[in-house]
Length: 185
Image (cartoon, rainbow, N blue to C red):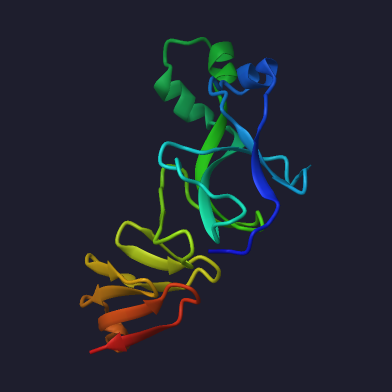
């Protein structure tokens, strides 16, 4: 676990006019606050899998981050060919959602591509995965691709039998806290 901080999620009421302008109907947005001060003007949502968040306690946690985005006009024309040009233009604005890993201080560490969902190995671990690929939250270091993993209280074990780098082939033992690793051939 991380050190306890005064970081918290606070519900925020977003003006209806803003939501309409950005073609958004969700209303369960939150902001990150530390010591009662909003850290940044970023809208977040918990998302469906975050029912047990311990913000300010867990070393890392994940939220959905929302940013203003404008669709390419060609994309809108393909999606809405029967709309007028004016209607197509109005449909371009939207709030783009991306999963983000945030540390216990409220710093965004990893922002995933839209429609990509990463997974924290553990809320106190420095390791996350995207599919079968494992990375370090702090450095972005790529450990390996593994279809088989096992976790103990201190380590993640990854079966790295298909790596092109022969020095990394074998069972990779990765320290959950600091990301140090070694190979068992």
